[in-house]
Length: 509
Image 1: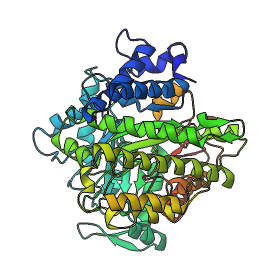
Image 2: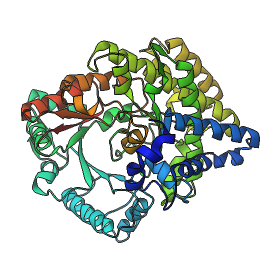
Image 3: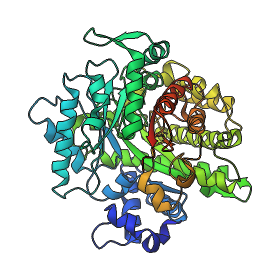
């Protein structure tokens, strides 16, 4: 569904999501989005005629249904607010007065937060206090968006079992997703049934902890698991390690880090039996430019200096996708098939490569991000060659990655330290009338075997096979008849397949 039909067909999403300003029409919203996303071009000395063309092209892409910014970016456009879609809480101490004022400031900017509670003696107590705070804030009616958060806890924390059971014992926790940060060493111990040593010296059987995770996920859908060690292994700025994940768990982040999200509708570029990779690449490059502009437009509007400084240094972007399931249906392919996974890999590799090319080109005129000046995996090693060149696709070859990597290395030139990830797309895909992210169509989600979900994720974002920078927000939907053992098997398989995170939802009614 094209954006120019939204006023007639999807006004419910625009209104209930508070994306529209009071009295605003969809065409006026589109003008507000385009004007805001390309206002920073003036700072970079772009000629007015070029800016006019860029704005017209971006507007056409959105109207045709080819791409769309994340809904926080659309909601916040023109409102003197950051255009970021997600964030991790900045460095703060929840035991200190004033910490909730900082948290509130992010919520007031329409940004959910990720919290790592591993540093606290009573993580569940802080979780309950934060959830109560979110409920109190929601009752004020001042927010355009639902307050969504992620709470994460290390598997080695002394209170990890209390945290795992938190939603069973406290069903009022509705403003948080929960994830346990597990390590590869933990999973090996769980598989062998051996003990691990918690941070207070207590010995606990790792398999028992994994059983508790599976049981709680079977009952409540939480917690999921996160492999922060695997995320950090792919972190190109390793001296700034990831400490947490945002609300939907698709990427690791440092304290205060944010992301600017935009989505490519991959189904849009199929005409008959021909896939238009040229059109796809053009859309990706313009989206890369628009999101880099979004970083620039946000710098003076972040609620905390740590977010501004990290954004200035890394200029992280999150180009994701929507419409994958629709594309596969149009091509007559079963979601859970080698051919479908191959098609998806081809397209996502083209998106990733095109965004890196665009970032390299932008750095020629705008300068590289600050993180490129110090130690980083692009200039100090063979980051792109090892991460992507070792498993090329039919569309992007190993030589393609090598040539681009050599250019980046020689010139120390890259505008954005990371460019691609797979968030859930939420209202953005609803506005385009297409399937969300990499998920199968809702009516068939439960029909796809659990392993089919995991194999798609492995081939797109796995540690040894992925074609995107980051991970994916991914839920394995399971039927009501699924057992706790079935859920446990999903977690074990996700580890064995090299995934960085996963959550499970069993249909309960």
